[in-house]
Image (tube, rainbow, N blue to C red):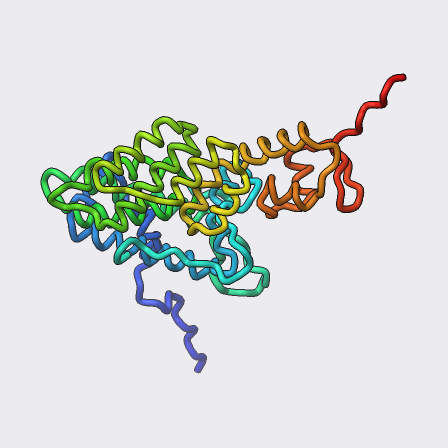
Length: 336
């Protein structure tokens, strides 16, 4: 007797139309309050979202710990503003991982394909893409805090979020992220009832003064901020004094010396002066010398962070190098 053929059918008991849930990034999945997503009006949701941002930030620092400075500069590079010098470059050594504050549309090329074609591991996101997600998430959180500040105020938590946001945005060379947050933190959130710790107050005031003087090119307002801060809470900073004086006097030796000693946040703000510094130094050297030592030029113009070929390419210098000397111009022949 012939055996009946097996019945055709699905081996799985799952329904045919059942789909797997889409795995969505929790930072990207959260929407803006201004666009109708009200989840960030709740205090617990705000704190949970902040903790996720901090965790993602620490993953970013760990993933790029071998070259953290370049990872932070990648957002500026991705926007087409190629920085001539590494904005937070330090002398050779172990890179510093910034810590969180007191607690603490993706493109086609936003992911790096694995080097091994047969690898099943997830692709590594580009640092610029990671930074964009973190900064955008912080913007969503700040918007939620502002919208809920009247109905459910939480000034201490808001201060913590803004301090963290300012530090991340400064390292990422993203003034749209840190400058409004600085103003809101110092003028609205810092109150007699809920004052910032003095260390953070001095730190944030330093950033605002230097950003005003360097990126905004407003020395008058920077000195006004410095004076008012000294009157209000006794603000004093040798770093601020030295940098402001070097800007006024054109003292590039002091500028580079101070830049080597400050932390990564101040060094990132000083990035906005590097191009003007190079041009000022090269113009002064070109007017004063016929020949000059190449190492001294590199030290004066770039803080020894560029070699001669890189400097020539960036500034389109027409000087001729002869060994360790650079011929800037030749003296005119005396007429008899």
